[in-house]
Image 1: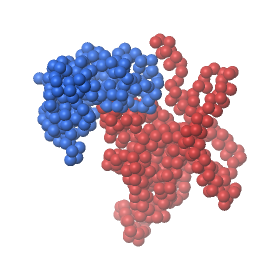
Image 2 (image 1 turned 60 degrees about the vertical axis):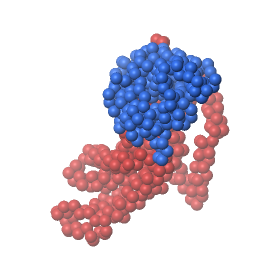
Image 3 (image 1 turned 90 degrees about the horizontal axis):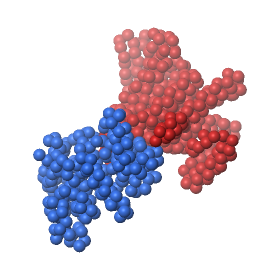
Image 4 (image 1 turned 30 degrees about the horizontal axis):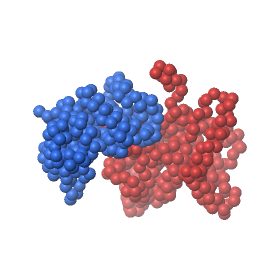
Length: 236
Length: 366
């Protein structure tokens, strides 16, 4: 059984339907990409998964448990961590405080201290700047902090919303390297990206969203060679 | 790595250092005022202001928790203070014969005032904290006014037959001859024992400061500040937003209630009309002027702005004019980016002068 299963999910903002019945699944250990243009419903999907939005109908099951009625803070406890779009870090708190807040749902102090060290290993830049106020970090560092913070809740799956947005090409490559490292640690990743080329390159499977519907899905490398994907998302 | 740990141990965290400076300031101010007043060096008018100074400082610090730390604008501070003032005064009157020792009775009254205010805070917070920004301000403003008007319309007394409550008039209360009147409508409550002293006020201010600084430095405080910084991120790390907003709101109300108790026990009579929206705004002015989120600033602003009108009493007719001008100038100076940079640069220079002889202690920039 899939770790995360989304079935026939409908979400709307008032009268406007954002998701018109999408279904997909994520298996343990996979990296899954969700690609699509602006307004396709990628962020809506993630926000519904993490409890920030509520579904009109359809179901989301995670480890066999229904998520659609669960409040956001409980979902984190269940093992889903969210790296929100646009590097939403806590601007006025230090790097270390941001990481500590990531472990808010945990009680094991020793484990938290150990995981902070692990995050520092993964992101040496954060270790250098641990007492710095997070709002003064560069864009790339803030993105790393948001990712590190998500890892602090010891999630089974991390959902990332446009981690490469607004970063320089060099940093974009760095961020994708980090995603691969996260996967190697055994954490499942659901990745929402506009940078389809990079996202497909590191994913196992992918789903293509278009105006609230999944129009294509399959093996990431096959999709990369798919003509319609090439034309619409890869600019070839 | 090891060296860093050692350094961290030797040097206090910036927040605790800040808090100790504040504690020291309050203690020194208290000692100076105590010596001056016992020596008879200050006017009776200023002596009479000592307890209100503590009251306003406590109110400003507590409101700063909601405005500065939680980042929500609340204009109902006077309402919570009113609840605390009335409930504690009623408690003291009811128990003035059974508990004759004011040192036991008054702390109980303060705690009861705080608890009742906190209950109101939670009751109002549950529906209201779903709102934010301007809407929260409007609703809390309305709450303050409602509380004030309800208390101003209440007649409460008790006699051998039990408790009588009326919202119409004193004669509707039908008190027996042996009855005691507690609340007399717009004339308020009178006969409250005068238990408030400057010493108790100063102790309460210290306790409030300790609570506020520890709150900010705690796990809960970090959670609350993270909500202020970014609601979506706070939710996505698994924070129960409503819970932490409510905790802060209730804590603010509790402290405001204790300040109300201190206030009501400073006067023989107390009218609800004192707790109008001007008072709420005044407390907000202390917070804004002292710096949003800056606990020490709240205390300083409260003290300065309460003393200022009294200091200017000598020039009676121009008093409020000068007060207003000073207020405006202070606001411009503290909010303008250029003036901020100017002050910053000059304090750096000033500190550099001191630093030459000393160690690198004077690094903390405000």
